[in-house]
Length: 230
Ligand SMILES: Nc1ncnc2c1ncn2[C@@H]1O[C@H](COP(=O)(O)OP(=O)(O)OP(=O)(O)O)[C@@H](O)[C@H]1O
Image 1 (cartoon, helix red, strand yellow):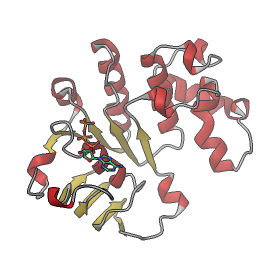
Image 2 (cartoon, protein in one colour; image 1 turned 120 degrees about the horizontal axis):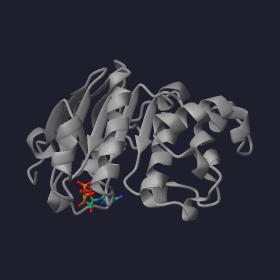
Image 3 (cartoon, protein in one colour; image 1 turned 180 degrees about the vertical axis):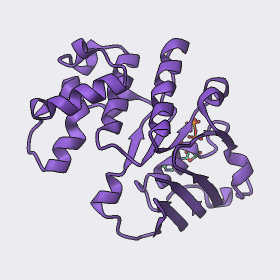
């Protein structure tokens, strides 16, 4: 279980050409059982880098390796590889479908994997119970809609969802933004538990203090990015 970026470069389409590359020749490696914390000032490209690492967006050049298997820009990524990468986003409100109850949200990757045409959380009752416990989500909330729970409760559900397919690589983009210290520590603890179970975990956050409590390695993006503006 590992994530590696080798010489990854990227510029957003439509970005001012005078600004040069956003990311240039970035190398990063996260091994099995490791939590790597990524920090950098706002706008430095953390979210962009995480999307490239999660194979959501192809890099302009360089290679992303998942479990040692390399994907250069434009390479076809098999579904099984996509499903081996879990992602947690900064805003659970933006990431969660407001029409789905929490149980359906958590089970959505399982339904997608199975090709189910509609949510069927009861079909996954056993796994749902495991995920609820793993993410320390109050099971009494599973029948509520996103607007009926707090941001912290919703983020726990989104963490449970990211874990649904037991990912080898877990990528988290400011997963505790706007959450209180207690919820932040709890969610980071859940992510660290995933690493303890063998996953390679990469977490970007502005909260260096909280992140450094669970990270094995802290990486400053500006130190690994060779872009002239970094
Ligand atoms: N789709 C896009 N098209 C053009 N430019 C973009 C796009 N997405 C982001 N950018 C720009 O790329 C730069 C890096 O953005 P990114 O969101 O990766 O930074 P970040 O380090 O995650 O910032 P923050 O800490 O504020 O979340 C910013 O200047 C941003 O405006």
